[in-house]
Amino acid sequence: RSKCVDVKNISWDTTEQQLRDIFSECGEIVKLHINADKHLSAGTAFVEFETEESAHKAILQRNGFALNGFELKISMHLKQTRDDKKKMRAWYVEHEERKVQETKQRKIEQLKRKKDKLKRKRIRRAMKQM
Image (cartoon, rainbow, N blue to C red):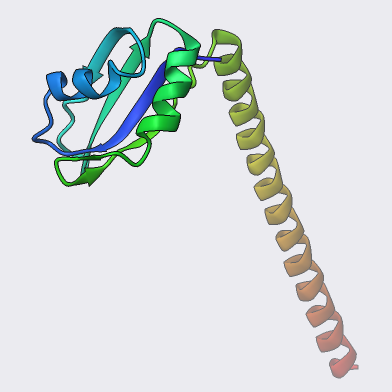
């Protein structure tokens, strides 16, 4: 479980103080960060609370809250542990290796079919010439 929530669909006009005012009603805020990446169509923020209960309260009470003409989308922030990252990396590597092997196998089968087709063609030609 997490003490943190992700806040999506934030207007670019929204200030950190506005978010603090809204979320402080749910519990003590330890950290609040607005993502400054303007490539997104709407902004995002990260809020860390002192307790898990405050994070759950924020999700239940503030999800869908209208702020500066945008409806906030709030979800639990899921932090990956090192083990999680290693497992994901291992799965990805295994998945990619399997794709490479399947591609090689498909190409081998295609070559075999081509060779068989050419062999049948040569036999038919030889039979016609007899």
